[in-house]
Length: 219
Image 1 (cartoon, one colour):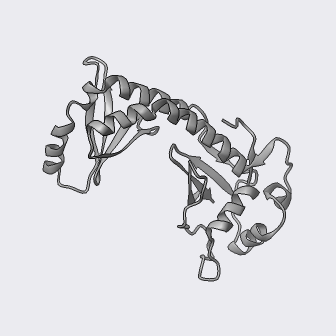
Image 2 (tube, helix red, strand yellow):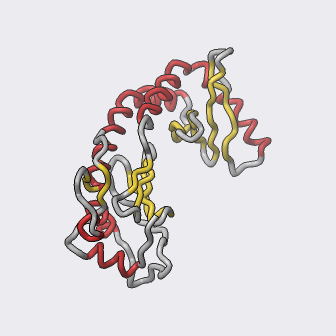
């Protein structure tokens, strides 16, 4: 992956040229990262429309659950309760989902006590969980790391949000629904961002229109 200094990055960002023009690459079959993100959002909204009612049905039954999401890494469904997260794995023999501990800030004895409340979730909501897993997995039926034309940037696409990477390091997050970049910036340059080198949200939004990526699919 290519690397540039912050000074060069700032010259690129402040210029009128997109990434292909600035670094001297062909623009054939390229679109802006903003356009690619819009296509990914359409794909996300299609998947959400197929699973939202089932997810809300589970959350109504268990009011303490704050989030339900599919993990492409684990190929499982994760649900969040407070500071704890648990994942559900399918037991084909028993035709249900088993709960497994994933992450918690609490001692394990309290974690196990809390799990009792959710012991039947994988049996009671088998049909709904199957649907959420199946349709969430469809979103990831694609390459979810999209490298820019110069190889300086890459998008790591996740379900609810994506991460723009710079030099193969996280740079900032992008909300999937709004396409709005997060306020926090993770420094990726040797000459670190200081008070005079701050990237604001407008800078980040402009950057998304200048980064060029393969056209690929749009949704």
